[in-house]
Length: 158
Image (tube, rainbow, N blue to C red; front, side):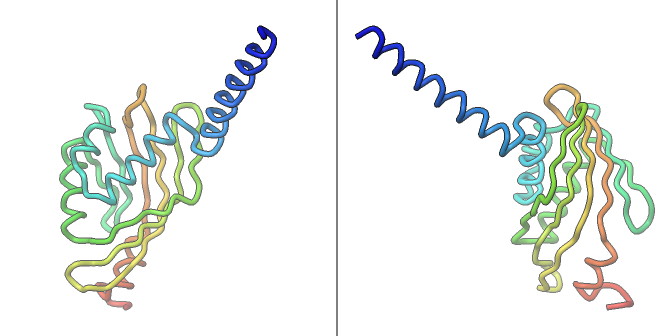
Protein backbone atom coordinates (compact mmCIF):
# COMPACT_ATOMS: atom_id res chain seq x y z
CA UNK A 1 0.00 0.00 0.00
CA UNK A 2 2.85 2.38 0.87
CA UNK A 3 4.51 1.62 -2.43
CA UNK A 4 1.30 2.51 -4.32
CA UNK A 5 0.97 5.77 -2.37
CA UNK A 6 4.61 6.65 -3.14
CA UNK A 7 4.10 5.95 -6.85
CA UNK A 8 0.93 8.08 -6.88
CA UNK A 9 2.73 10.89 -5.06
CA UNK A 10 5.65 10.73 -7.47
CA UNK A 11 3.27 10.83 -10.44
CA UNK A 12 1.50 13.91 -9.08
CA UNK A 13 4.81 15.64 -8.33
CA UNK A 14 6.09 14.84 -11.84
CA UNK A 15 2.90 16.24 -13.39
CA UNK A 16 3.21 19.48 -11.38
CA UNK A 17 6.87 19.92 -12.32
CA UNK A 18 6.18 19.24 -16.01
CA UNK A 19 3.27 21.70 -16.01
CA UNK A 20 5.41 24.44 -14.46
CA UNK A 21 8.31 23.72 -16.81
CA UNK A 22 5.97 23.75 -19.81
CA UNK A 23 4.51 27.11 -18.69
CA UNK A 24 8.01 28.52 -18.28
CA UNK A 25 9.14 27.29 -21.71
CA UNK A 26 6.04 28.59 -23.48
CA UNK A 27 5.63 31.87 -21.64
CA UNK A 28 9.12 32.66 -20.41
CA UNK A 29 7.84 33.59 -16.98
CA UNK A 30 8.90 36.60 -14.96
CA UNK A 31 10.12 39.47 -17.09
CA UNK A 32 8.60 38.12 -20.30
CA UNK A 33 5.19 37.90 -18.63
CA UNK A 34 5.60 41.49 -17.41
CA UNK A 35 6.36 42.60 -20.98
CA UNK A 36 3.23 40.84 -22.22
CA UNK A 37 1.24 42.61 -19.47
CA UNK A 38 2.86 45.92 -20.52
CA UNK A 39 1.64 45.55 -24.12
CA UNK A 40 -1.77 44.38 -22.89
CA UNK A 41 -2.03 47.55 -20.79
CA UNK A 42 -1.15 49.60 -23.89
CA UNK A 43 -3.93 47.74 -25.77
CA UNK A 44 -6.41 48.55 -23.01
CA UNK A 45 -5.21 52.13 -22.53
CA UNK A 46 -4.74 51.26 -18.87
CA UNK A 47 -2.46 53.90 -17.38
CA UNK A 48 -2.84 52.45 -13.87
CA UNK A 49 -1.61 49.05 -15.02
CA UNK A 50 1.29 50.67 -16.85
CA UNK A 51 2.23 52.62 -13.71
CA UNK A 52 2.25 49.37 -11.71
CA UNK A 53 4.58 47.71 -14.25
CA UNK A 54 7.24 50.43 -14.39
CA UNK A 55 9.65 51.60 -11.69
CA UNK A 56 9.38 55.01 -10.05
CA UNK A 57 12.50 56.15 -11.90
CA UNK A 58 11.44 54.65 -15.27
CA UNK A 59 13.03 56.30 -18.32
CA UNK A 60 12.06 55.74 -21.95
CA UNK A 61 14.00 56.65 -25.07
CA UNK A 62 11.49 56.41 -27.93
CA UNK A 63 12.55 57.03 -31.52
CA UNK A 64 9.84 59.12 -33.22
CA UNK A 65 9.51 61.12 -36.46
CA UNK A 66 10.92 64.21 -34.72
CA UNK A 67 13.83 62.49 -32.96
CA UNK A 68 14.06 60.70 -29.63
CA UNK A 69 11.43 61.38 -26.98
CA UNK A 70 12.62 60.99 -23.40
CA UNK A 71 9.77 59.98 -21.06
CA UNK A 72 9.44 59.36 -17.35
CA UNK A 73 6.75 57.19 -15.75
CA UNK A 74 4.15 59.97 -15.50
CA UNK A 75 4.71 60.99 -19.13
CA UNK A 76 4.36 57.34 -20.16
CA UNK A 77 0.97 57.11 -18.44
CA UNK A 78 -0.13 60.29 -20.24
CA UNK A 79 1.01 58.90 -23.61
CA UNK A 80 -0.81 55.60 -23.00
CA UNK A 81 -4.04 57.44 -22.14
CA UNK A 82 -3.73 59.75 -25.18
CA UNK A 83 -3.04 56.72 -27.36
CA UNK A 84 -6.27 55.12 -26.09
CA UNK A 85 -8.21 58.23 -27.16
CA UNK A 86 -6.63 58.24 -30.63
CA UNK A 87 -6.95 54.49 -31.35
CA UNK A 88 -9.56 51.81 -30.71
CA UNK A 89 -9.52 48.05 -31.20
CA UNK A 90 -5.82 48.03 -30.30
CA UNK A 91 -4.10 44.68 -30.37
CA UNK A 92 -0.40 43.82 -30.28
CA UNK A 93 1.16 40.76 -31.87
CA UNK A 94 4.41 39.96 -30.07
CA UNK A 95 6.45 38.09 -32.67
CA UNK A 96 9.62 37.53 -30.66
CA UNK A 97 10.15 38.03 -26.95
CA UNK A 98 13.76 37.42 -25.96
CA UNK A 99 15.01 37.70 -22.40
CA UNK A 100 18.68 38.05 -21.43
CA UNK A 101 20.52 39.55 -18.43
CA UNK A 102 17.56 41.48 -17.02
CA UNK A 103 16.44 42.87 -20.37
CA UNK A 104 13.66 41.77 -22.71
CA UNK A 105 13.71 42.52 -26.44
CA UNK A 106 10.41 42.45 -28.33
CA UNK A 107 9.52 42.68 -32.02
CA UNK A 108 5.86 43.62 -32.20
CA UNK A 109 3.08 44.78 -34.49
CA UNK A 110 0.23 46.97 -33.29
CA UNK A 111 -3.10 46.70 -35.11
CA UNK A 112 -5.65 49.43 -34.40
CA UNK A 113 -8.39 51.67 -35.75
CA UNK A 114 -7.58 55.39 -35.83
CA UNK A 115 -10.54 57.23 -34.31
CA UNK A 116 -10.16 60.47 -36.33
CA UNK A 117 -9.90 58.86 -39.77
CA UNK A 118 -11.80 55.63 -39.07
CA UNK A 119 -9.03 53.74 -40.87
CA UNK A 120 -7.36 50.58 -39.70
CA UNK A 121 -3.60 50.60 -39.52
CA UNK A 122 -0.68 48.65 -38.22
CA UNK A 123 2.77 49.61 -37.06
CA UNK A 124 5.85 47.47 -36.55
CA UNK A 125 8.33 48.18 -33.79
CA UNK A 126 11.11 46.94 -31.62
CA UNK A 127 11.47 47.59 -27.92
CA UNK A 128 14.14 46.70 -25.40
CA UNK A 129 13.00 46.87 -21.79
CA UNK A 130 15.46 46.78 -18.89
CA UNK A 131 14.22 45.50 -15.56
CA UNK A 132 15.12 46.50 -12.03
CA UNK A 133 13.74 43.66 -9.95
CA UNK A 134 10.30 42.86 -11.33
CA UNK A 135 9.54 46.31 -12.79
CA UNK A 136 10.48 47.92 -16.09
CA UNK A 137 13.13 50.57 -15.36
CA UNK A 138 14.15 51.66 -18.85
CA UNK A 139 12.92 51.32 -22.41
CA UNK A 140 14.43 51.91 -25.82
CA UNK A 141 11.98 51.61 -28.70
CA UNK A 142 11.56 52.44 -32.35
CA UNK A 143 8.32 52.23 -34.33
CA UNK A 144 7.46 52.82 -38.00
CA UNK A 145 5.40 55.97 -37.39
CA UNK A 146 5.83 57.17 -40.99
CA UNK A 147 4.39 53.91 -42.32
CA UNK A 148 1.40 54.18 -39.98
CA UNK A 149 0.81 57.83 -40.97
CA UNK A 150 0.76 56.75 -44.62
CA UNK A 151 -1.80 54.00 -43.94
CA UNK A 152 -4.03 56.50 -42.16
CA UNK A 153 -3.73 59.09 -44.92
CA UNK A 154 -1.94 61.50 -42.59
CA UNK A 155 1.31 61.90 -44.55
CA UNK A 156 2.08 63.62 -47.84
CA UNK A 157 3.09 60.30 -49.40
CA UNK A 158 -0.23 58.54 -48.70
